Image (cartoon, rainbow, N blue to C red; front, side, top):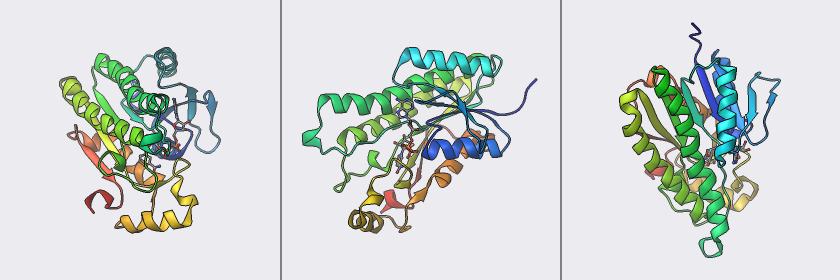
Length: 244
Ligand SMILES: NC(=O)c1ccc[n+]([C@@H]2O[C@H](COP(=O)([O-])OP(=O)(O)OC[C@H]3O[C@@H](n4cnc5c(N)ncnc54)[C@H](O)[C@@H]3O)[C@@H](O)[C@H]2O)c1
């Protein structure tokens, strides 16, 4: 029997997802990625990413069929769901279409991917770990670069994860949330504006942005058996920002 740890990472081609996939590969885990642009192996860490649009049920179904095939029908031990989007958009100019796009990717996508992974973990009988990505935006308003739809979508992720932890816990599936602060990835626009950057740093007790690797390490802890009794919780990785 193959005992190598199997980790599925969404958003594996960029930022936190990429760092999580690479970190797991360095630990010797079997890693598969899902992202909008798929079906290629990276040269640096060998992680294969398959195409998946996380908002689309048929695409998620196809992607998981590919995952089943790649792992010979064995369920993933863990999912770290990093795919998501942020759009700077003041509330009064947010259209219904903006809302639907952001909430669908960040909240609906979280449910579709988590449910597909958990279905396999529950059926496989070994349980597993599901980690979803929320944000400091779920608990702190942002006067500088606000996005009401993004904040609401990330609040939804926390509520969703609590429900999933209770629903799937008896089957041995843990569900947790990582809530990053401002992390230096392609998603982060604030670092391009020097004045906004200084204001943001002033709100972070650590006085610096976080790195994708620093978030990835927490995601990998939750995905591992080191966190065997951790479920239904939110871990902030924000340099102390949510405590300030
Ligand atoms: N970077 C930050 O400061 C920060 C802060 C708080 C929370 N987060 C959250 O962490 C997660 C990862 O963020 P990141 O900074 O690594 O972002 P990123 O933009 O670097 O990467 C996001 C990835 O998600 C993929 N993606 C987007 N829409 C998709 C879809 N419909 N289907 C499949 N894949 C899709 C993109 O292709 C990309 O590879 C996100 O959920 C984000 O909201 C990030």
